[in-house]
Image (cartoon, rainbow, N blue to C red):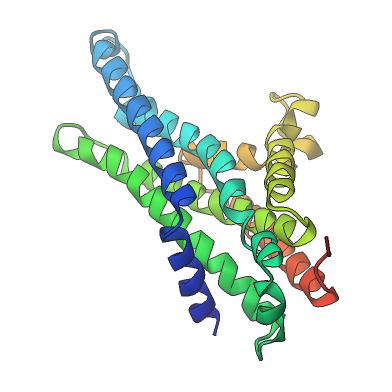
Amino acid sequence: MILSIAIRELRGLFVSPLAWSLLAVAQGLLAWIFLLLVDDFQNLQGRLVGLENPPGVTDLVVAPLFGVAAWCLLVLTPLLTMRLFSEERLSGTLDILLSAPVGTSAIVLGKYLGVLLFLFAAIALVALMPLALTAGADLDVGKLLAGLLGLILLAASFAAAGLYMSIVAAQPVVAAVSTLGLLLFLCIIDAAGGRETTSHPFAYLSLLRHYDALLLGVFDSADIAYYLLFSLAFLGLSIRRLSDGPPRD
């Protein structure tokens, strides 16, 4: 049943003009930045030759590209997740879905899996850009995979938070704005303790601080656990909130 709901949600995204428009804009922006980064890397070749351990194409092209992709996900995800429950509530189909012989856990997980698959497809398109460099450059596969893992975990965390806000908010626009505000706050919360400080509690709560470590190729189980616990926490809150009944207009 979870898979059926996920396929239904994924099909709805792929036939949505909004989803395609967002995906096209994000990919166009990232492709433009990718070409700029490649051009800058070529211009720096002469300066890098004299360095003892010069940074490679993965450090100067792939990592910055994935860094911008994270911010694109921050904007893209709320606009996709806002419709998960808020739109169904406005159309009147949510009551039908809740009255079906399907548990709230299956409904939440199915919708979550559907939007997550769409985000994974967007991440796969981003991954094709640096892979195109393998014909003429040596990529650090470890850093590349760590960056992709970070993007996947970020997407999972963003989607979980957006799904919860879609249940709480009565209007899709309110859900989108609330999700964007929440995620933005959690991304820059480490600024309260100073970005130089890694032991500050705010630093650990920052979504991007853990992602920065993965971009550097540092694989720490604490970073993975943080994203998994973050996603599970919001999924649990979503199931509990939907079981209590969604808000009414």
